[in-house]
Amino acid sequence: MCARFHPSQDLIVSASLDSTVRVWDISGLQGKPGGLCKKNVSPGMGGLGGIPDDSQHTRNPELFSPDDATVRHVLEGHDRGVNWAAFHPTLPLVISGSDDRQVKLWHRNDCKAWEVDTCHSHYNKDYIQGQHN
Image (tube, rainbow, N blue to C red; front, side, top):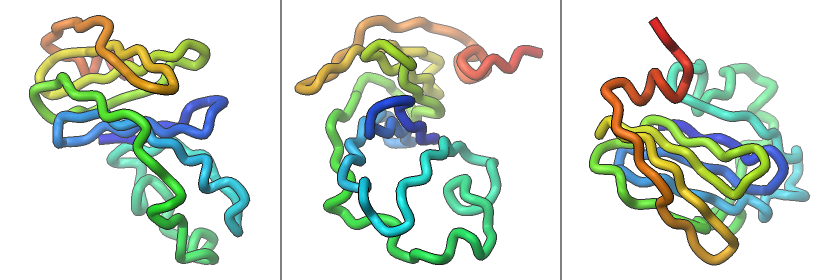
């Protein structure tokens, strides 16, 4: 599981144990009190959702409401929980890696998203994140 911000658009991509990847539109968060702090999160980064547990982050207990973020795309195609997903920095692409040992490349536009290619691997999570032993 992880969540990553798009480098230039108001989008988040999230990987989930329900075998899906979701692209979220977070443009509704602009102008909220406290502003929008873009920070990519993954398990093991410490704190709740990757935010360090300190008093600095308790100023605004209402981070966002259901109206602030909407699901733009649900990408289905993995057979097991998705561990990792990220946006390409300049192209309309998403890449994801799952416990099904598949790395998938997805193309997206404003209306829809679809699977472009699949790579099969024994160690896709390590391959994607670049952790080679």
